[in-house]
Length: 600
Image 1 (tube, rainbow, N blue to C red):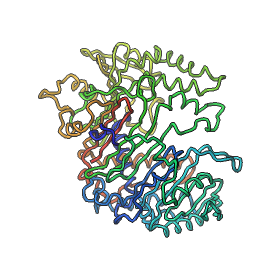
Image 2: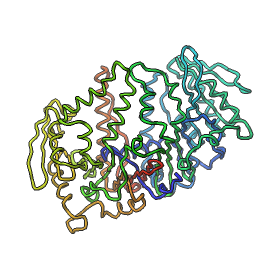
Image 3: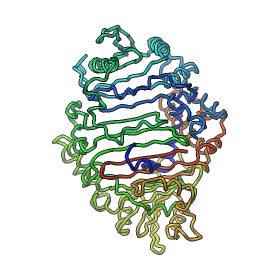
Image 4: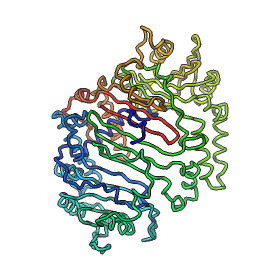
């Protein structure tokens, strides 16, 4: 982003539990790598940007720059070095084998994902491509009218033989009826593709392979791609793309941009039970000018940046994210080495915005539904929802204290006001639970025992049936373990600069990351990845995948599949040699909300 604050930030907004969020970020990164040709040679793709040739009615696109753009980063970028580590070769092969098995299960006619197919895909990913959506309605064909048109443009320079190979195999292996009929489109010979009930159009226009789901979109795109000069009313000239969304730095691999104001809500298919168009309009989508993001592999690590640009004043949908702050109260709960994530949210604004949206979207005969929800919540909570949510003053943090991300060794904390009312809310809000209460100084400890049928999973007997809460004058803290909870309260009362303090706020790695961020943040996250027990984490992921696969097989009356082993032959400790930290932040100003994250 070219926004002045972006260059100093290094994080991303989060509100999910720490382990899930960090692992999700890492998983996305690794899956992305598994889809890339990191062994690509010098770029042979055309250097001009395909985005410059898009029509003015483009309202969303994903621009893949091609993995050849990463040349020069392989020896310095920590994420790419992990991927290229020789010990990771077996893990890459396991990933390919797993995808092959899944492909064969979905389509028995297919050969699955062979090593040859994987190499072809990686080779195709060397070149740039753009996928997008045009706000261009298409007339009804076969009784179906389209309100928008999607497209894919691929720079096929040096890759035509792979596209021809793909077309031949697609026709042979399609699980449904497949026909490819020649069709004259503009001055080109294209094809109409019927694949089951789906219709699409394909043209090889010079060095570009173009695929659309409507004929109108194809006729609009072809002249722009083949003309020696830029055509009038191009996307770049008329879209008023904010400067913060114009990113093309070295190492950029993927750019995303959506312009919500270009989406014609009136063209959305009507739904008699819920008007999605009315729901979006009530959220003041017209106040959101752009949503954009960028994934880049810089000299040291992988960086993901994003922005939601628009009016952030009171009443705007963007005002749901709270005002920025230099210091986070919940940071006092995090000890050095723990994984910390915190977001500042306006819970009352969130509730009012959603209720207004549902009220606008429901038909007249169901207009009382939203009011009914409000009344029911008031009864269950013992107070009106807006009053209950106003007890929470913004911060929500999740903190994990264990290197294997054991969920029972995590805490969740909210900043609050009026602790007596928060205690009353807790006692009302959990139906069927049996709370017991104990006072210790200015802190009230509440133990909530859940009935057997309220456990998250009957297949997880190790999960405790109790949840522990501590309500202090300024904070509500929750955990599945009482000792973890009480230790957190002790840290809350320990001055950060004292000899007894082991606060994350004084950790050198955290301090270095925080110094690169914006001064006032609405979200903050940090994890010391070098100390993670990756073997235990991977084992937990595999166990969950195998349990879900087994349950699904039993439901469908099929044999239980063989257990999944994600990284056979790979020492998970290798990850810590390359990936040292994850840091994230988000901030808000009068122009929008900005996000930034770094894995290095």
